[in-house]
Length: 306
Image 1 (cartoon, one colour):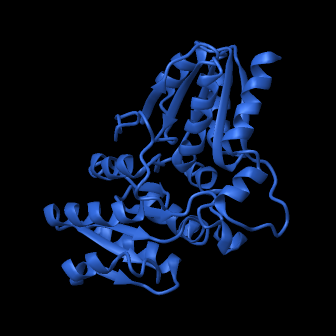
Image 2 (image 1 turned 90 degrees about the vertical axis):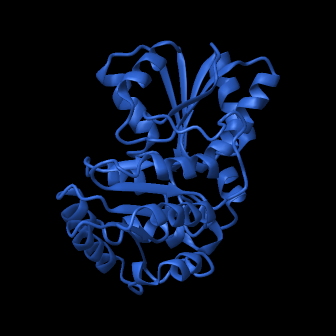
């Protein structure tokens, strides 16, 4: 989604002179096309994410729409206080674009794993979190959310080519994309791991286990009305996220179930505990945490049998 992000941003910047791009010494071989087109609307602040958020806050206050770009953990965790005190508390249109949600940079070391971003940022409340499932949805999400008030965080994947079957580049206003309807179980996911979850759903359907498959492109603020109605129609619900279990998608769904007294069984799958020091490719890490398609199929079959 990184290539889609920069291509879409260039198109938006042509139409809107308020749009700027800031990076914290990242994005080489990516941002050059923007720099060449808009040399006076690009800022590389160096390895100083806090300063980048501070600059973006001031620029937004002055009437600009700054997009700030860095890997998920460096974008969301290192400058968290600046995000809270700047664009969030002042309701400013700063856009945070973070590639590398989950294990996208799995082989680059534990510091590069983006596993806590949704939980941390949604605790700030007045920020919109968008996690596209594929590059087509990312393109639409960037354009559709351009005029939303307040700050937005985009949790981006790396793949620019994959298209999730059935998604068809949709990005509805509430972020709810239903890719299948079935009576056995409701499967809810968000972001890049929708690819693995989609494969699991297709394997289940081939075995006669028909699932409702919901890809949630806007996990925060959650679409309470749609989720409440959908959860109430299913006895078993499985949430799958490439994120720690505490505070992420599964927690969001659990809160809605509890607050609306919905009678269903919730099964959450995400990162429960990370083996100390373990790094590797994204497929390897997903398999180690039971988030690969085969593991998800086993979870659903066990749930349906029990």
